[in-house]
Length: 141
Ligand SMILES: [Zn+2]
Ligand SMILES: [Zn+2]
Image 1 (cartoon, rainbow, N blue to C red):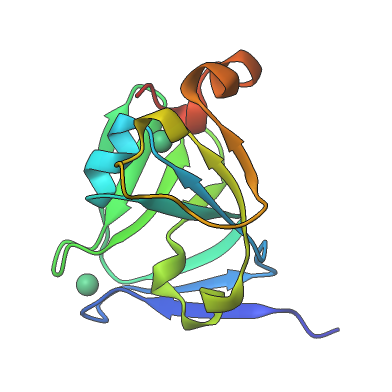
Image 2 (image 1 turned 90 degrees about the horizontal axis):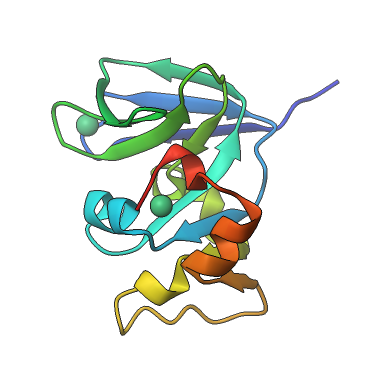
C-alpha cells in the first residue's frame, strides 16, 4: 500500500522533514504568542508520523508546549504539546501544501488589522475559542 509522503525543509536546508499521511488542511492562530513567534500570521497543520533530519533548536514557550526552529537559518518548524507525539507543523516548509485549504482561524480578535483571510472556514474569537478549548494549542496568549 502506498503512503502519502510529504517532504519539506527549512530555508537553509539543514533541517529536512518528512510527514506521512498529512492532514491536508491548515489552521491559523492569531493569539499573541503565535503572532509574536511567527512575526505576523501563524499557520500550522496537525501531523503525527513525522521524521526530522538535522539539528533542531527547541524553545519552551509555555509550561505545556514547545516551539522548534532551525538554529542555522531560524525557520520555524513546528510546535508540540508536552507529553504528546503530535506536531503542529509549519505548512510553508512543504511545497505541496500550497493548495491545502484553510479550515479554521482562531483568536480572530487578536489578528493584525490587515490580516483578513478569505474563505468559508470556521472563525472564533478568543472568548469563543476558549469556551470550547481552555488551553489553545497548549499556550496562553
Ligand atoms: Zn535552516
Ligand atoms: Zn496561538
